[in-house]
Amino acid sequence: MKRWTPAKGAAALFRQFGADVGRACLASLVRGEVGSAEFVNEPWSTVLAHIGNYRAPADRERISTGRDEGTLLDLSRAGNAYWGRSWAARALAYSGDESSAAPLIQALEDHHWRVRMTAAQSLGRLRLRGLEQDLLPLLDDEHPRVRDAAALALERIS
Image 1 (cartoon, rainbow, N blue to C red):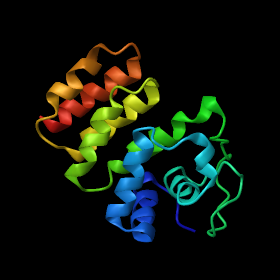
Image 2 (cartoon, rainbow, N blue to C red; image 1 turned 45 degrees about the vertical axis):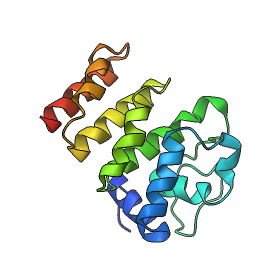
Image 3 (tube, one colour; image 1 turned 180 degrees about the horizontal axis):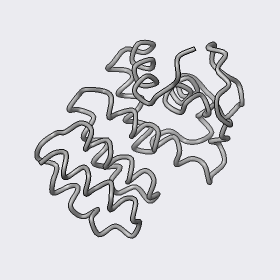
Image 4 (spheres, rainbow, N blue to C red; image 1 turned 135 degrees about the horizontal axis):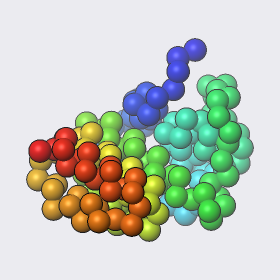
């Protein structure tokens, strides 16, 4: 069995839904447009299963791969909802499309540090020029991991 990676999860999502629909789903998730109660419904349960290393389905069912890595997270719990936004930000790094930058830039202002960190990391992985002004404010973020991610992203796009 092949080991899951974020790139493989994103690729599986894009194969199943198509690149445009996959990116649109990820953008909706990263912008927080999908409520946690919707995570058990399609397409969100499958999207989250692909991008969350099969730890995501809030109804605790697995998609048809039979995977059993990791502990399932109940994303319907308010304290866990940020994981969907974070996983979506990470998956957008592997979209290979400049349109992924817009929702990631919005995510740089997310209230949860992990989402901000992952959005910065993803922007760095995309290596799109001209995002310095979006990333620079994160060098003063309250969380050290966000600051580190922003510094690395700035290094990568320079």
